[in-house]
Image (tube, rainbow, N blue to C red; front, side):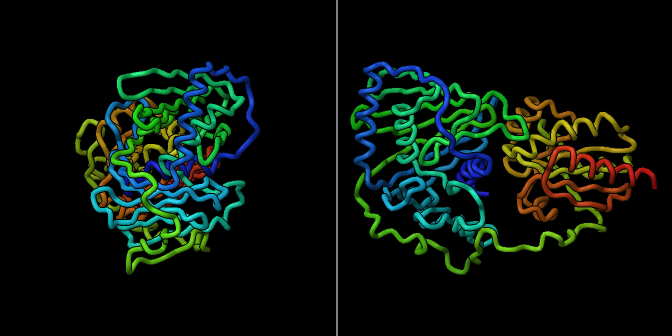
Length: 413
């Protein structure tokens, strides 16, 4: 998956859980100087009708100092008054090849490309019963939402504005019992079935003194950290009247629409077959092979992803499996398919106290297990390493009971 796209996919997964509610709590009053300055910044942002810029995007797992995602993108952003969702349209191209279309939004549809599959997915927002559209805004629209929120919210917040030689630094901390994300305006994330930890939301802006416009932001939550640097911005030199999202579509790509009916009852092609072989690195760069697990009667393999909420929710269950069964009976292995970096694996394993083997995938493994990087997937293997069951997704208790039932059935034979 394109790394910049992965950052936005994390936002999309979060969006599936959120809804807009009235502001709650008691706002800490802004000092006059901060309020007046932010009004000036907001006026400057209002003057941006269009922009082109490179965007250096990064993402970290909390506790990690090395980004698990780092990519340069190129954005064409337009103010779109006709769009009541975020008030903006945009196209995102690859920073090292600005002819390569990644994703975009025109006020009517959201489009994502999957170059490895030569496919295009179009979301026309007719297949989800949500009070908003699942659209992740571009840089100037996003930072404008943050500034506007600070000036208007009645939430419990604190701000800190500091002045340096050529920029000002603004820190916003939102002290609510739910995390706050910005998609055109503030949306509040209810506590999900899996624990994201401390709900405090932190946003930081770096604002240039020369033009009073943000050029960098950083967002920090208990489950993820991301940042964006806006580089070489040119303002108000392109017009939305010339914007045609469909003109960016690569030739020869299959076009699909989100929500198309798929056969979800089809049995996996892998059931009843020998599990694909693999030799992968763990968090300490040690090579671990499928053949290393030749003694247990059952092997549970999870294909997972760092940043996936349901995957995170399944960790206590997999830890319990590892603890409750003898290694001669059951072994547990997780294969991480999204990030695949040793330092990220080390941090994730330590932070979540993972007690089972945790490995970094390669493209061959993802293809062999036929997951297309969707996670989580559980593969239950018998003693001959024949795949007896494939389970997609995770629901606490329900999935737990299903996996334990299959394990006990295999052990009884």
